[in-house]
Image (cartoon, rainbow, N blue to C red; front, side, top):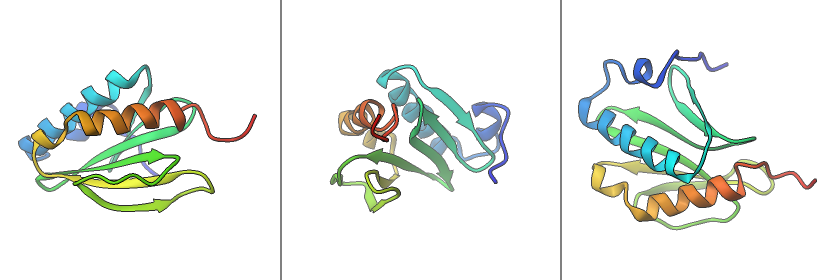
Length: 123
């Protein structure tokens, strides 16, 4: 069970300032995808519509991302891509510098928001 944090600010409390800045930039990109719930937990923050489509957590001085897509994508910061359901592939990315949070990440987030966020079960 993941323990909830009260706010994103409480999640970021005590974290590396550079990593916190990367986190905040990622949060801006996620918010630009469209309205979503932000669910801070003790160890990770999720973005969801009906279903979680993205997550981020600070790992030392780095930012780790999970972006869920209906396809396997490539990206320079990609660590791994693995199926989490029959249809959804989670992409784990490692961000070392805020400059890596560019249009390519924004495009992956928009795709995740539009295709995975509404839910993936056939209606």
